[in-house]
Image (cartoon, rainbow, N blue to C red):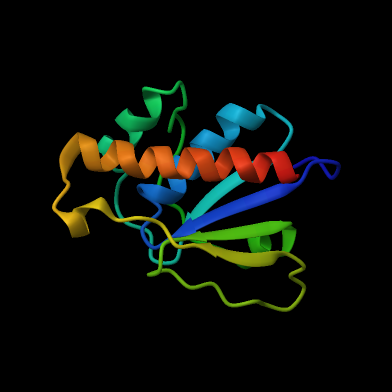
Length: 137
């Protein structure tokens, strides 16, 4: 971790799809200007292959990633914590200085959209939000 760079943490429940997508897209667009992490409140057993394939279409990658738990050290180091979706919740802890924000994201499956189309809609939504976020840092 570089003290001169902002540290972002993306959080979802399983850390297998949406938070990994946001982290990969942010790394792609920010290059090395931001330290980017992702974690889950209740990490799953594996990454979502469809999520990985979707971000790869834009040149981002899940390479080297795996579902990880959110830990106190990461919360204390973070400058911003972004919770993706409405299912995960992060409570402030002692020594934490980061802001916590929630990105209420679209869920295409609620409209009957599944498969690759669903994943690409989620990816495009996260991609736009990540680009906007990078521009503010």
